View 1 (cartoon, rainbow, N blue to C red):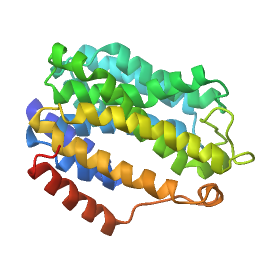
View 2: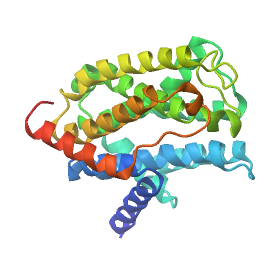
View 3: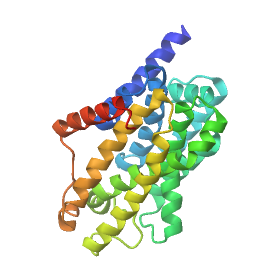
View 4: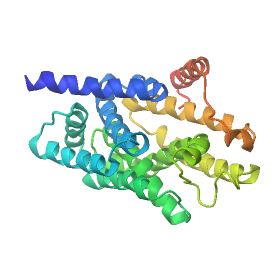
Length: 279
């Protein structure tokens, strides 16, 4: 009956994905059914860790993230966890040969959010982006290439740049909440007090360069993954375009969104592009 528990665990990870991110959930639906559960499990793991450091303000966050990490390694050792999110994730880690350095880098960045509020140097910024976003892209890449090391190495840089682009778009979109609610500043030298059109455009230029390189990897992905990843790429490119066309002071005072109607249109657009083999 362990198989039934495992199936329920993956369904829990899918539920987490659907409730926390409609856009990511939509993109996962565009993946081959053979790899969807694995991607749901990765999202569930990183989402829960992120929730601990970002949302559980009335609880001992340090204890919770440390306990979450310990329970993960127990699951890896025993091959089971009564936490369904950890149970499904440890299955994916083992099946697709996700290396422990990626998991550790991610947890390191999550823990940094508990003790650090300002990333003042480029080195600190790059290190945080690597752990919070790049390695998530690499975990997903392991699934996309079915754990094949040669293909993974071939697409590794592009996967990291896509993860970076997604995270930087999130940082720019969430600039107000990160500053006013979480008291965090991720972009070196940029906060609500000195944010202006020049600093906005500099950040956007950096993200556009990430997207340009990332696209070169998307077109080389296996067919099982290409459409889903391209859908996410199109969504974030649209969000970046909205941010680019929004005055800096509005970004600093509100959260820019892409409507569900627009998301549906983007899905149709990406589907036509994919079917015409333009990607």
